[in-house]
Amino acid sequence: MSSEELGSIGQTHFDHRGGSAWTGPSLRSAADPEENRQGVDDEVQLSRPEELALQLLRERVLERSRRCLGLERPQIAFLAAPLSPMESFVGRLISDQNLLASGRCGSWPIGRIKAAMEEGMTSGLEETLEILLELDELDAGSWGKISAALTEFQRKIQAAMTPD
Image 1 (tube, rainbow, N blue to C red):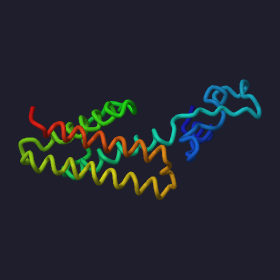
Image 2 (cartoon, rainbow, N blue to C red; image 1 turned 120 degrees about the horizontal axis):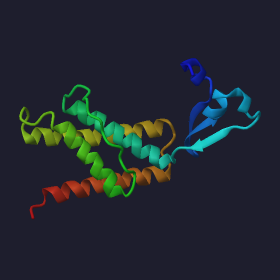
Image 3 (spheres, rainbow, N blue to C red; image 1 turned 90 degrees about the vertical axis):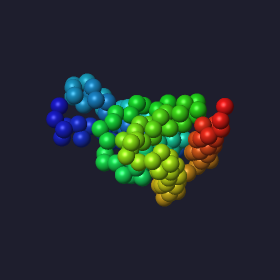
Image 4 (cartoon, rainbow, N blue to C red; image 1 turned 180 degrees about the vertical axis):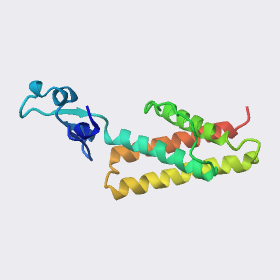
């Protein structure tokens, strides 16, 4: 199937009520016109707005961390982040930030690296909120998830700074 055919099969859209969804004929029916059922659309719910907010937060924090660390686009394949429980989501985010920070180990003092990572978290959070506000997507559920992520991030940082 050519890219032109794929582009005409259906569309992906975002809305505040249900996140992103695929609407249009299924790939199978588009590939085989004889099986195309007239008037029937398939719709798949991919994620809720809260999940989209967390995915956006993760993406913006990692991008801002990379910039704060002064790194070019890394050739790193980040693993998919679990969206729950929140401890796992934040743990994976911090782990990915540490992976980025490893690009500066030995060339920057550890204090400068930590400051860049904190700035990456802060500016990534700010950018996420700006985007969600601009798109009118910052509902109570999304705000709750982002707040919970920030609280967990602060808890993990404090725990790491507290000597045993």
